Length: 294
Image 1 (spheres, rainbow, N blue to C red):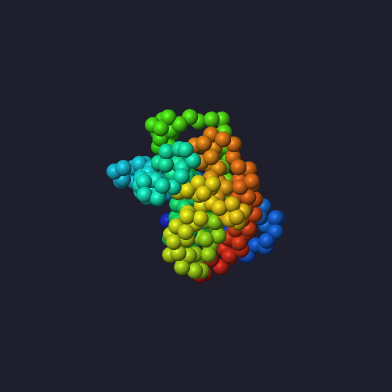
Image 2 (image 1 turned 120 degrees about the vertical axis):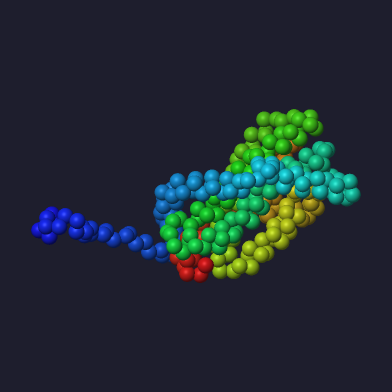
C-alpha cells in the first residue's frame, strides 16, 4: 500500500486494467489445414451451439397452445392437401401404399430439409447486432437452425409411426437405413444453409427467393410422386439432384421395407461430401468482411 493510501484509506485504488484480447478475422484459404483449424475452433464453441439450439426450440413453442404439435401440423397439412389433389384428382401412383402415408413418408424428411434452409438463410441477417458486436464462430447461427429442425423432425416422426399402425404397415430391418439417410439429409441441409446464409448477407434477394426456390426444388424431388414415374431417359439427369436419393430412399426403406437404391444414395452422399467442405470454407472466407456488410 502506498503512503497516500495509508494516510487516506478511503482513497480509490487504481487497478491496472488488462487489455482485452483482439481477434483479427482473416479470410481462410481453400485448404484442408484451414478447414481443420476452423473445425477445431468451432469445437470450442460447442456450449454456445447447445445453448442457442435449446433457445431456438424453446422460443418456437413458448406460449403456444398447440406446442410441439406444430412440428406435426406442417407435414400433416401438406399431406392432406396433396392426398386430395394427387390421389383423388390426379390419380398419381403410390406404389401400392395408401397415398396419405406415401406422401407423409417423403414430406417428413423434406420438411426437415426445407425448414432448415428457410430459417438458416436468415440467421445471420436476423442476428446482425450479435454478429457486429461479439466475436464467435458465426457458423453456429445457421447450424442451430438445422439442429432445431432435426428436433422437429423427431417429433413429427411419431405421427408417421401412428400412420403405420393405422394402415397396418409393417417395419422391416431395412428401416435401420433411415438413420444414416437422415444424417445425410442433415449434412446436405448444413451445406446449403452455410452457403445461402453467407450469400444472404450480400444479396438479400436470396431470402426472398428461398420459398420459391424450395417450392420448385420440391417438385424436382420425388416427394408427391414416386421415382418410378420419372421417364427413363430423364432419370439419369434427374438423379443429379442431391435430394432425390435421400428422399426416395428414406421412403423406400421405411415404407416399402426394401433395401435402398445405392446408386441414387451414392450420388447424394458424394454431393454431400463435396458440398459441405466447400460451403464451410466459403462461409469462413467471407466471414472476414461479414460484420462490415451486414
